[in-house]
Picture 1 (cartoon, one colour):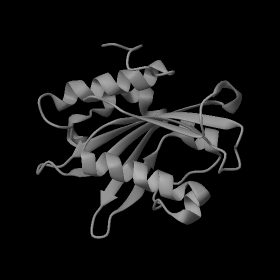
Picture 2 (cartoon, one colour):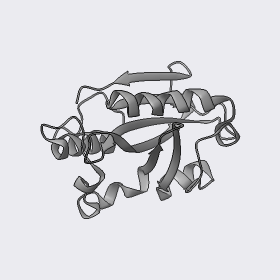
Picture 3 (cartoon, helix red, strand yellow):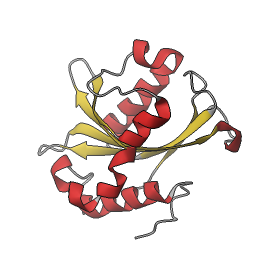
Length: 164
């Protein structure tokens, strides 16, 4: 697997992207049942599983890894993605998840956490669609790596769609 490819700062994200691609095979995306925790146990602390609910479209944090909870100082497991949770970044967060769900395509993001009380942090994330047996996205695997905002010399939020 290409651990340093795809332009990721953190090789763990590159590994998870390659892992997801190997599990999806010829399909448009992998499914949740394709992912084996025993194969990715070292990456669980940076992973966030997000349920996709429809009619109306909304997202719920199913599982949030311990490294993410430690870095952000909060555990949002079970919470809906909402304005109360994300403040001024809510629309950007929601639209990003919507793009993953509707386009059935992975994304890479670099974002300053200027909207949150940890504004000294930036995050690099990987967002991967997971499909059900009918090919519809029912979950998003998000992996996140946090670093000092001083090391982030880009805009407030940069987004790259990834070729699956």
